[in-house]
Length: 222
Image 1 (tube, rainbow, N blue to C red):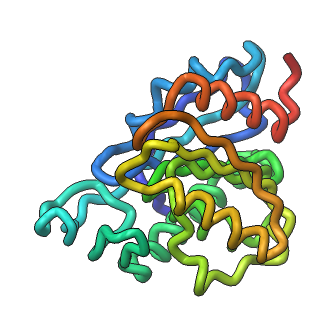
Image 2 (cartoon, rainbow, N blue to C red):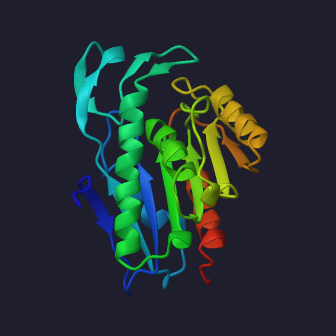
């Protein structure tokens, strides 16, 4: 089964858990690769990190410029219009990556899905609709693009979710992070929410919080 090309970081010992992390618009799988040592995970943590590369496609909001993207964005207003067909196709590619980790011996309950900005929108769709229970979902500086159409799989009806957002974000307004949490709560989820005084990016405090969340969800011994 072919999967997207990825940057993969293997632990020192055989992996017993995995984090699949989707980058944002215009970036690639190398974008979040440097954060792994900054997460503060225990030295013996057997976590494999997978950072897939999005395909290069024309981006309407950038005048048709071809760039790495999980889907096209046709309107950058607060409500933003996106190509849902492309987003769903990217979520299907995420499912293939999860399937591969299970085939490689990682239980679904030890797989965390993370996504930044565009990658977070795909992560919402992909994680909530996956047919086996996952360890958790991390959404960073993102928005719930498929909230009106998504049909969560019963297997992930109790999926742990943590949302992070910059209070000064000019690209994806923090309002969209709050809105995603409100929608998730209306669907029966109990998302956590953290905010940081940053723009459209991450800071060391956020990275450390992500590391602590991974330790909790994956039960990583200190």
